Amino acid sequence: MNVWSISMAEHHHQDMLAGIIPAAFSTGAFLGGLIYGSRTWTGTTTRRLIIATAAFLAGWLPILLFRPRMRPPPRSPCPVRS
Image (cartoon, rainbow, N blue to C red; front, side, top):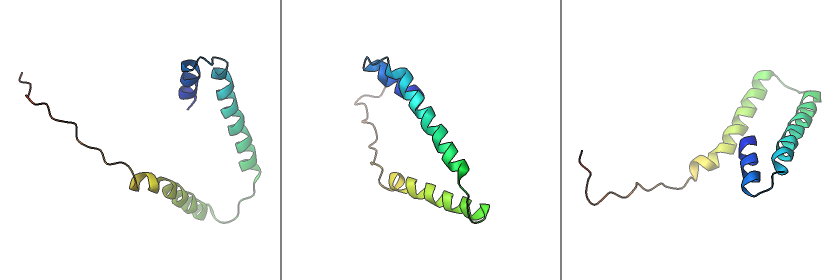
């Protein structure tokens, strides 16, 4: 994500954002880690893992189920012989 955001900032001639965007991502990750670490979790570790896995799968299911159908590339009218 950082490489992509820097590339997009440079592509749109916004070189200043090439440093600000990764800094914003890092700040968000740091604050998220502090909040996550300060929370007291209930339940067993196994139960939390199963719930997290189910949530992860639920997030990916729409992408897997409703992906666009890919057409095969068109065939060349005359095959190339080597």
